[in-house]
Image (cartoon, rainbow, N blue to C red; front, side):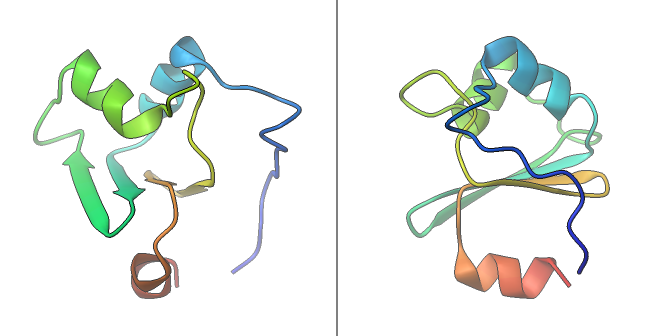
Length: 88
């Protein structure tokens, strides 16, 4: 898999407005916190703003890291099992 754009989250913070704009560019969001994975299908389910922000933002109010965009899918957080299964 080739990498596209890489952004250092410590140097460039993505807040609520930026995170929602990023969500508007994808069809699916996979949000990982620990062993829990939340899958949001934005085309089918149409989640509300609070649900989106809960999946995208960390306690600091910025986009959680790592954030990986693959085509029309966005992966937030880290899950080795999900990455090895979905990011091929």
